[in-house]
Length: 326
Image 1 (cartoon, helix red, strand yellow):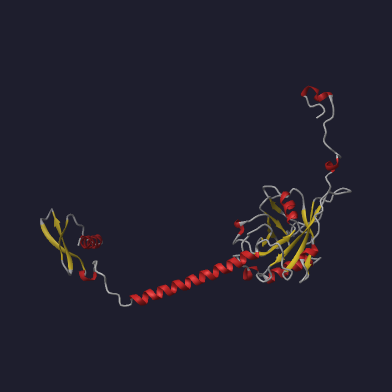
Image 2 (cartoon, rainbow, N blue to C red; image 1 turned 90 degrees about the horizontal axis):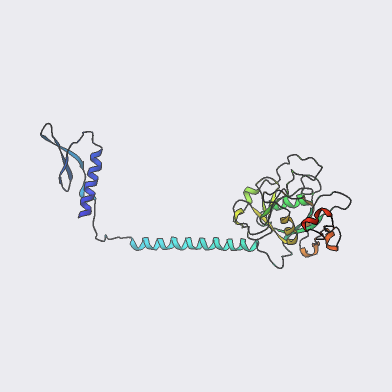
């Protein structure tokens, strides 16, 4: 009963706010079943004028605690349960697909020889002097041709080709230690060679990219953007890249080389020394990628055998500091 009175008074007050006549004193007289009537008292004229503020049927405002009979209650409940079951089935199917995609990017002990594999040879260091100190290694990657077939075909052709467009001679332009590197930059060529803008390499990424494939492990290959030839190689699990970069492959052999590449970076991404892709190719189907492994070649450390050791010799200059013979 109290809630009904409050509702009636609130509706009447809202309606009276929109009336054109200015009220000085407002008093509610009666609220019947069919209308609500208000009176205005003017202090100056001492006359009573009655205005009809709002008329409505009180029966339409059914404020009651009684349970109303629902004729189709059972049918409505049954339809709601069916919709919920359909939604649960759809969610289960999505989770199953997501688990399969996660299994694709996991590190496996034994790669599948029937999958599509490719290799990339990297060279770290500057070719300077008679005996340049260069580190050479090979990455063997598995390509997801069932997820992004046309992108993988373009990537493989650029690895094979000796002429433009090609990845040979392209440089790793950004290296963030312990995070990822940006490889395949064809705008930055080998030292001593002028560079200019290259044409777009990938043209069908938007139509076939699956943005749900996660960067779940180190060694995940994903495109840097939708057009250029640059691609990312992760050094760890990189959830920050999920949904922003389309994954098209993963590294199966060569994690020792990945560690060396990661050590060549600075916090701002600038490489300490050039890291270049020198060669690439495709492993024939049915051939185990282990047969294309290549040992990581690192330059010998001259201090390891006792040569060029930095030993402070005796000098009268350091006698007073105590740094004699150390």
